[in-house]
Image (tube, rainbow, N blue to C red; front, side, top):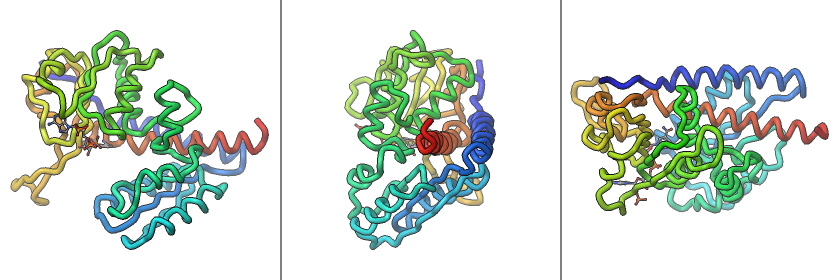
Length: 300
Ligand code: NDP
């Protein structure tokens, strides 16, 4: 058996097309477009690649975008002052500070400084709380919600299934565990979250109908850890050395694809699986935030 590939490029491109149509509609209806501000502090090359991609996607979909590339020596006070200004700027509906910032920047304080209405990453405690409660008036976190949308796009209903999430980070594992657990359509799974403290991790993964790997360890999930017919979602993005490539390296996920594809019913590739969904949801969230602001401004 060879699993069906879940094509994140195709699903995200459909979502992006719908987003572009929403932006055009909002422009016609309110005479304004959604705006996203991305801030990057320091010169981590990967962070600059990510913010450039986000800026390019804004342009492609018709959103207003502002990019702030701040030097590594930027103080907390300067960063908080910029966030404060953007919080009050009515052309901006989403504010994002690219992770990881330099060590002297306190990420928790930065996240808390962004008003929840513009926290399109869903990192602010208010939005995390709303997500946990199953409320729709906040935002859903980009990568976990991207995973939920991929399942939905392929008609994979988590209801009644055993979903096992490997990893418990605040960005991916924990929110995904909470989202799969919600008593609502498209969720309602029985969820197990395993992590570095789990004893005999494979005992749980072998029982998973839906297995989601988000640990940041190249090809950690091997064929013998997967139940035949399982749906396997690989969130991991890891760069490993590969002397056969011109660049000397290549990207792999947290799942050993060649082995697991033989057992899975559905599987995401890396790249081209979960990756493109993250930006697509970020754009959706910015549009959602803008629509709320535009409606409030006209008293709807
Ligand atoms: P973190 O490093 O923040 O968290 C990793 C989690 O995996 C932790 O909970 C850790 O456990 C657990 N873990 C690590 N090693 C093991 C192990 N050997 N056995 C069991 N559990 C383990 O990573 P992120 O959640 O931020 O990211 C995970 C992966 O997803 C990375 O490859 C990252 O690049 C990728 N990613 C991809 C995105 C996308 O857009 N596709 C977006 C975000 C991340 P513990 O808590 O005990 O330390």
